[in-house]
Length: 286
Image (cartoon, rainbow, N blue to C red; front, side):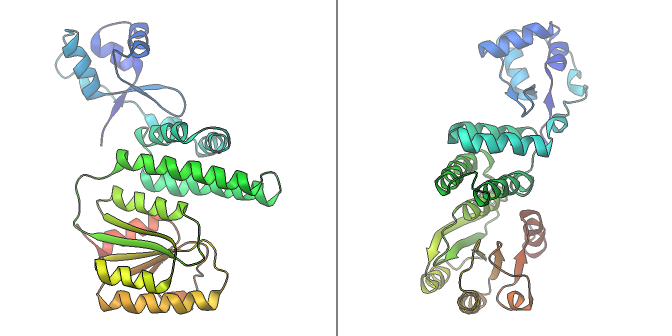
């Protein structure tokens, strides 16, 4: 796991005053990033590059100092509040910068989605239900977050591919893109190749895609189900197609009930991304 150092620690490593460290970071000479709490953190390689470029001699074993505890800044309630404001008032670039700072500060991708993004979108939904936010505001916030998560993919994409493919989509009538994009991002961070078939997909097209790409995993997302009986009928058809290619079908989302019926139309129904990762580790060992 990559470690980070504070301004004070970097000053000690370089044998200079902390004010010089801050001045050099402000000028762009020394790379750093800021945590959600606004504190500067430094990567070891960036400090070494700076020392080599400007002829600082670093004592042997100096990096044995205790690295910065970046997680100290990670207060979920505070982060969710900041994130909510950004979704309502900032653009996707600023939202991306904040999401990326959370990852750099030690947040796992699963915690980012389960503990922050889900919570914030629930707050957005509550604002809409209480008539404190119009439907256009909810769509704008969701759109901004979706774009920011797509931008984040390049930062957390796992270069060590596991050789497995996932085919993901939503049935016809389901238009919520954000959960699908979040799922794709999470799987890519775990080394999966992801084929995102998108939302509002007729079941025949969904099955056609499964047969064409022959994926190791099929993921069905549902945030809202208007016709439950038809949903389970279509899910059953999809599940039969998935079993024909010896693949696994995972379902997720509030539109799918965790009753006995759900168990018959999928291999696993996940309540959150953390449990999904646990399932994948057991059923698709590296």
